[in-house]
Image 1 (spheres, rainbow, N blue to C red):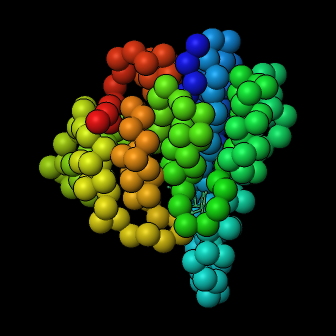
Image 2: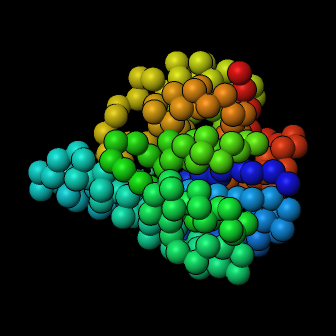
Length: 227
Ligand code: UTP
């Protein structure tokens, strides 16, 4: 049995329109894996988070208020995933790390969203990895792994199949630190990966075969971050 802390990117759960058929397949995979492993699923905010953050920003809301708006969106998405895996899961969206740790000792699946302003659900995923002494951390997003630069903007960007946490910090370090900002992993999350020394996998969450292998600690299509 392995303990795996998994970030389910908002871009996977709620791209433009949430896809119930995909969520059903994702949930079926997670339920299968939870027969053997203990999983914490940290769900991102996706398009709804960004939409509401931008609307509030338009009216002058401050950044930490916008972070709270984002956190609410992550919890709405977490509620959807929890509904789909409820047969084996702690029956509520955990509000904070302590609640999730306690629940994880009693249920094979715990679902949560964001916790506090100032970071994203990537950081929460790494915190949970630390708290549970996880065997691995899996970060799912909508690109196939960590690139040398943003592949949506730079045609020369290269996928890195292996990298050190220090290299990850270097790559994401220049990203803006504001509510709703996009990037493969947020800068604090990257620093926490380096601190935790837990092997971390980054992959496209729509590729369920790779997600299955990553949870098992087997070869998958994506990036392996290890010291
Ligand atoms: P996400 O974790 O979805 O961030 O939180 P993201 O990187 O923008 O999106 P994906 O999931 O990788 O596509 C959305 C927003 O909610 C706030 C932040 O403003 C974040 O950008 N948030 C989230 C927090 O402030 N704290 C949290 O613990 C989580």
